[in-house]
Amino acid sequence: MSKKKKCCMPMPPPRKELSDNPIKICNEISRLFHGRLREARSIDGVMSQPGARLVLAVLALNDGIIQRKLVEDTHLRAPTVSGILKKMEEEGMVERRSGEDRREFRVYLTEYGRQMDMDGIATIKKHEAEALDGISEKEQEFLMELLVKIRNNLLECEKDMGEGAQ
Image (cartoon, rainbow, N blue to C red; front, top):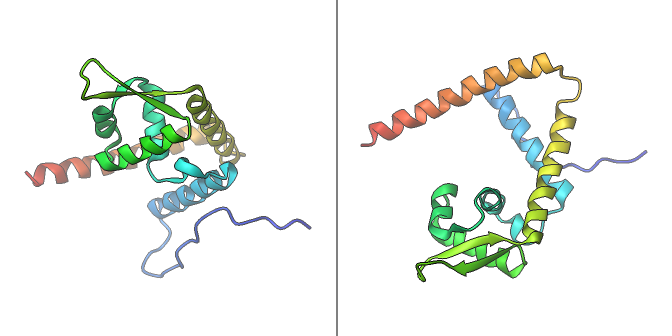
């Protein structure tokens, strides 16, 4: 009998004050999913650093982006992005080249960086398929409608909070 390894962060203990609800279940699903991704990819190096996958994703869509724009698009702090890029460069995932304005660097993915991105996407798709096994297309469409409404409610609250701070 093979023993399956745990692939996620431990779940918080159940509390009577926090009954199961859609948000709690979404959070648990997110923890389980990300735990599976971490284990499946046995991530090490720069990609184990928080924010690195986000930087890689933005670069995959915006090859040759300037570093300042990368900071804006990821919403990470400039020193964080700089540190991630330094490590990505050391690992052969990106290269930085000076642009027209010599003070700004453009960041490009190398072939190795592109392959890392594609490998990550393949892993995500594999685990998505496993998570959705046995759920019909119609059920998935209905679930998406509900989850989009929840996300939009949270985004609206965030927008309202931002306006209230001004």
